[in-house]
Length: 476
Image 1 (cartoon, helix red, strand yellow):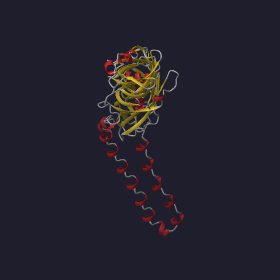
Image 2 (cartoon, rainbow, N blue to C red; image 1 turned 180 degrees about the horizontal axis):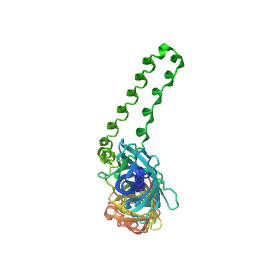
Image 3 (cartoon, rainbow, N blue to C red; image 1 turned 135 degrees about the vertical axis):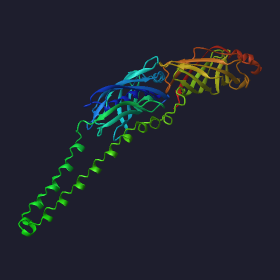
């Protein structure tokens, strides 16, 4: 059941982004908290919801020109009882993995969308018996994620979550085959809040070196004090050219400030700091388009049973006839993780049994099975499997001495269905296991439809004390 749930594990990752606006020279910090529910698609169990809570302290003010530093974060992620059941029935005892939060940051000059922030989920024990449980996660945000260049409002929105590298391990600490290093795509459920934190980016009093102290335009010495033309001795001693003030000291070309320091294009504040478009949270963080879960994790039925199929081989010993009938066929199982119960369709192929009646007479019987209703039962987290089936048994032909027919027929059927209860231990859903009966009774035959020796046939076929041994192997 590969997925089952490592799902919730990623929840904690979302909190990583809590720190993207924090730290450094901020004036003060305030606690923030956001709870979201995601629909995640896992191997085996398919769709399952995950509830995450993100908590942290985020500064309310951030200085312009300062890089946001790394911060510590932590929080819980709630895993469902259904997920715990799914992991446990596969032999899972611990869960761990990684996740990535997807965030959008709104600010003047932004937005910055689709920022991916990784997180690690610590190993947690899976409860047995199955129950909902919380995972613990902790980590740091990147230290160089963002530097604010302009003052104004800022917002952090959590818009997505990815679960990856999830692993469920068994009691020996070994990865469960179907749940080893898997990914689970997630989508934010419709109508969920995304705003985690708000803050104000403030001008730190002229610390922005670009706009406030740009020396290039203000003190450009090249054109204004060009020494080459002004002190050239050759031209200076020529009386004719030296006294020509027009060419030698023409200030128009040498110090033309119009092109060199045009403030209009270089510092146009209208386009660069328009707060309306840059910080409008409505369009930038609209959760409907960004996190629509419909296509990726369509939860048609969150509790839909898991489909499993097995090949079946085995043997039935018939006590009254003192012989055996080989069994073969298959069983299609629908397993409900929430309840731990299953309902199945059992198909046994026709077979031929070999018996010794009256202690010396070799007999063969061709047997047909007809299941009535579903096979039902349960499978718990320790691998204990039970099943109950009801079926009619028909002896289509009974022969002695290898070929002499003495009875049977298409209507030589048990007067009521036989009830067969099987049980096994150590059963693994994606491998299989062995099942057996302690005892089952073969009801009396409809002797009127079994030939002139129907009564004798019934005597040596019907009765209690019969057994079945069965081996199920998972069909991949």
